[in-house]
Amino acid sequence: MDFVTRRGFRGSVKLSEKLPPRKRAPARNKENGDPKECPPEIEARLLPIVEALLVEHGYEKFNIRDAAKLAEMGSATIYKYFESKEYLSLRVARKVDERISQLLSVHLDLEGSAHRQWRQFYDCLFSIYDNDSAAAIIQNVAMPTYIWFLPESRWPVSLVRSQILHLIKKGRASGELDPDVSIMQMLAVHYMHTVREVRLWHTRKRRWPLADRVDRFFPVLWKTISAPVGPGENMQVFRASTPLADG
Image (cartoon, rainbow, N blue to C red; front, side, top):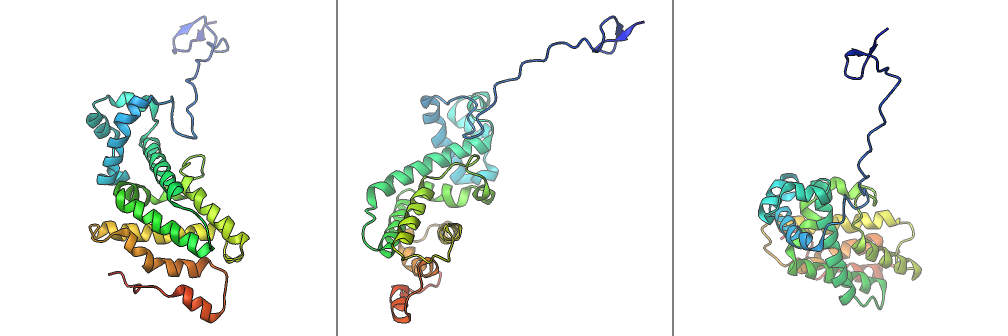
């Protein structure tokens, strides 16, 4: 009796006599999106171009073909090291995160009260944004909002976040932060104010220095996360040097 072969023709090869399975390609590194480690010389050519495209067009309109053309390399070369535009954008976001974190580490002294430390953090962060507008846009405008909810294994852009967590830890230890406000709520308050201010600034054609906005939002932020105090003391902390209107 004849048997159907793997190709559908009649012959003497039984289906039970299966060919050995093909070897699968090595698994990609899902943590950082790099199928292979990207050589420094390729990153040096590619990542500044990707950053500029993300700033100009945003994540949704960014595509790898444009980046490849401007970097004068084939799209296949980029895909060799980055699985998709999500992972390529992730690499840029991580570089920006490293850049900002390093500057914050240099300029923050984190001495004195928690109020002073948090205020200094935002003075420094927004001054960095004024001197590096691409970083401000990458972190707060260009990337889709869904990335904020990805697990760290998929979006490990966490150096600046770690510095905020350090401020939270110190403020809780000193009793200056409200124990009823969770860590996630404090992070949410940070992102709410920071993203709002940068997007407002970006939408209105960057008409003002971002550092000038700290006086407008910080009193509200601090009132939200700080431990309850007496009415008189609370008003002293809450008072801002400029009104809260958008201007």
